Length: 330
Image: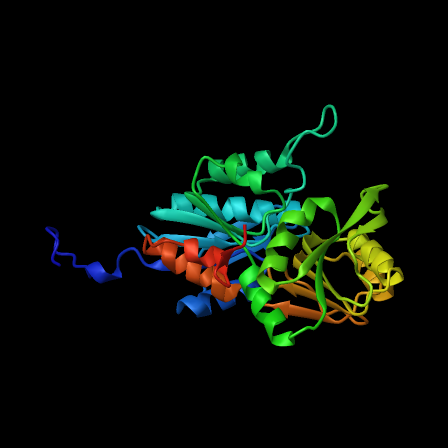
């Protein structure tokens, strides 16, 4: 097409998908870009000597559909600032739409006032993301479902369950029992039990501190069963390890734990190494160094997130991505 001033452009080159990434999980961002069939966008994301973050987008994004991949894993505040500054840089570079792809949404456990004079930080983070200039959010396995309502922009909330279910199906486990390691994870555990056609059990727990948990009772028959514990995230592995010890004492055979986000600090790694958990099944929503002494199976959600990006870009429905084995994960 020829413009009035003599410049020309190709209409088919407009509104291209571009994927950029901060430093929280570059391997996942590259895998997502590969699944879409594009190269990861060129950008510089570094820190000044005083710790301030510097961002420069190294290619043209004017009028394009842009996706910023950034998990808010530790160091959480640093990765959040990287994301905010990248979004601001893209907005000022005239991107037509900016979608924040947040595989793991930090601060999600601070979703309500459960004590006097405490913040609702999950809502504050949502406000900051919107203020930075995001048009849409794509995330996965939020710790609290109501966080979707903290945003005044569209939120696509995916689940890792379809990816994990395919792996579990290949294991062909006999005498399987799905266990929720606490009452809060009951809804997720129930979805897995329905899909895997198993019974459901619950472990009652008492939290003694942010790092220490005591499992007090098992509701359900676990003796002689292969156990699959289901939770959305683990960091100190207190809930999982305490539940595994109690399940082992109750006569369970093999014990597997399935979590979407395994952040695993030093305390969590040490607990897993001493626990009765035979295998930890998780995803690559957060980057994590290799860990010895624990069998960890990491499944990739890049294909799921990549497919969601393609559908968002083409204004297609993402509903089918919530489903597995003919059912829904929520």
